[in-house]
Amino acid sequence: MALKTHQSVAEHLRGADRTSSVLVVDDLEANGRLMERLLSRDGYRLRIAHDGQEALDAVALEQPDVILMDVLMPKLDGFEACRRIKDDPATRLIPVVLVTALADTNSRIKGLEVGADDFISKPFSEPELRARVRSLLRIKHYTDELDSAESVILSLALTIEARDGTTDGHCQRLAGYAAALGTALGLETQEIGALRLGGFLHDIGKVGIPDRILLKPDRLTTDEYEQMKQHTIIGDRLCGELRSLRRVRPIVRHHHERQDGSGYPDGLRGDAVPLLAQIMGVVDVFDALTTPRPYKDALPVERANRMLLDEVERGWRSRTLVETFIDLNGSR
Image 1 (cartoon, rainbow, N blue to C red):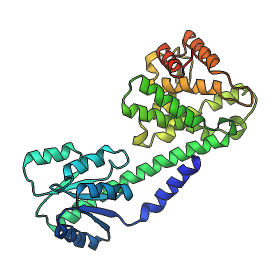
Image 2: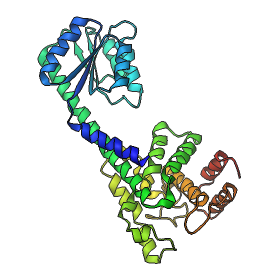
Image 3: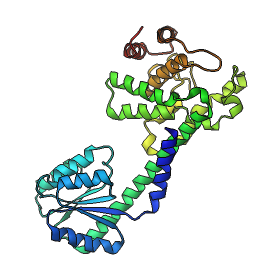
Image 4: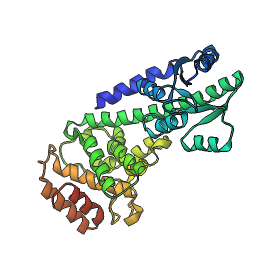
């Protein structure tokens, strides 16, 4: 998986200088050819679709940078095609401009409701069309740069895991455990997504921990342990520059906090510990207990569950979170 992530980052960066692509969707051949002629002057790669379904097929094949979509079309109209594009997490960031002769307010409201980013009224002027497309392309390129930065961070996190062969698969397991627990708790989709990403990024700050400490097979000294604890703060700083990771930052910084205030780095107590960080803390302990390490064998699930319940009794963990997680993994 680390290799795949590295490849996706490289592909993204290689594509940063490619020619911007525009998908024109109009059932009238003359309209499509007119837009193609006007926009080709700016060097864009143009593709034409003749109805909403053909547009969806084209987007699935090769995602464009901007879509210019007529509204009134056979088979699938522009409103419904736009809604489907915006409902799909893989395509929702592609700017969609509805090109329409419909001037009434209700049509514009409907366009906004299905997620349209802009409108152009027919008949359109060439300067306006070209200016709107340039503006939306700038926004799309900024968004792509954010995605690239997040991909680099994720790739870095997987590289860190690869430094320690004894933790192979740890990030993937935590992502799955945490997302499953969040789902069982009825959390919102965005929070579950943050938990899944947090599983991969929770230990990213270990990039700043020397190998002599990170890979030490014996118990850490007091000084070494204090240095190891800094990985939560380092990780928080690494994620801090990306707005897209704002929900993940509390997981990265606080997944070693405890309910009684004995955790680190900030000694938070009770509900002051962010819920997503509490969830990550529970599944992190479970995975550490149930996987082999150089200094210990893997424990059976039943034993690990009892130890989690012991941490509840000591005031370290939320009973609700632990008992819900134990119910998920099927044994007490």
